[in-house]
Length: 417
Length: 150
Image (cartoon, rainbow over all chains, first blue to last red; front, top):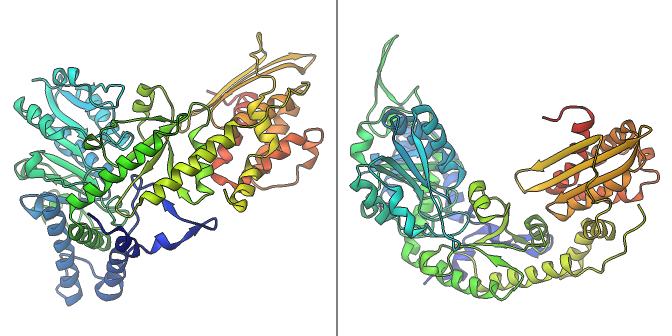
């Protein structure tokens, strides 16, 4: 298990107060906080060896290149990638998914093919496929979900067919917390010759994820949700698939030889990394991976599982709250969406904020899912390694206050109009 | 809850706001209507539906229905009351004045005479992320009056 007390000491921001109250940060699905080691690695780069990578013969450039490529090794090991060059740096999950949409999918999805997604995708794993389907004359198929917020097992199989060219699905839903059975789905999709992209934005930071075990063709994730800085993310591509992919962005760094009218491409992974990359943030993501690796991802998952179990048991006691997503924590990450029919999530969010509690309110970039659930927005608390049962208790206590505040008022008579 | 946070919240959710939220004014739909407008904020699901029947160039009947957070609903109700007996030109001036108030401009005091409840919306300025909730009814009205609505 995690030593949460010790962990909290590594996160400077957790000491701050918000409106005079200790910060209770429960918006980790949006972005995580950063440990001191990650912040320090940014300072170390800019103060100690700031230089461009892959092109200088001077000491600073070589040092920067070493650290930058070392970070790629760390990330590759973290997700079980067979080789570091199968990890391409991107800005975030959205860019990683778009990279696949603009390269592999644009070239390989044909008229009549089907792209299969689920009803619980983040917009970033839906909107790019809408474009590919439209441009290439393919069809987008959406696997429905049950009332409990899991893929409908009676229907899922019928969606993956010989027409399926790509299955693009999240491993953990950012809106529901549902853990999807991506390994078995990948096996099914592969049996029909389809490729599989996994949106790992909410899984890679929170549980052991091994691309060899999952056997997926693409895995996209963001650094800032896993203790790293914003502006850096990664795309894993299975080596034999990556070899055949055309470049995404063109320019410096990604070329081998250039003539006035043509160019040849650099090797992997540089072929997909045009221009000066985000050096400092890539290195800092390496530091974040070090931090998580030292904790052990099994321990991270176990901590969140237990805390989620505790939070669900407490939230369930507030009768006026509707909870979403599976109640079995073996099928669920630390994401806790809730809703009250009388009090809008934004009002709840404002009330909690004034007590120092940060949650997210809105549609969480999953408008089609919200529509399927018959609501427009939810309030969402999301947990990470530094959250405690005491913080959950505070959330629950203040939520009860908030519901009373907004619904218990004495009614005045209508004034004459 | 500690005193300071409670006081802050009471500034936002003052008696006037909560009263309008719980007892919306002029909320029955008006048919037939001379002015009609619908506004939606797809990000949070706030909705406003407005109908006005004119007589001799003034609002004889006003109907405003709203869905969503308390700030949007209160603002819609305050607007429903404020529009009574107004000419479209006066409605437009009111909408512009509310927007100016939310932008922190204070040279529009005259517009609020006789509309004390409009002042309650001023508190929302202290909660910048909620300003759009308060403005939805008014921008919906303005769009209709200036013919900019799609």
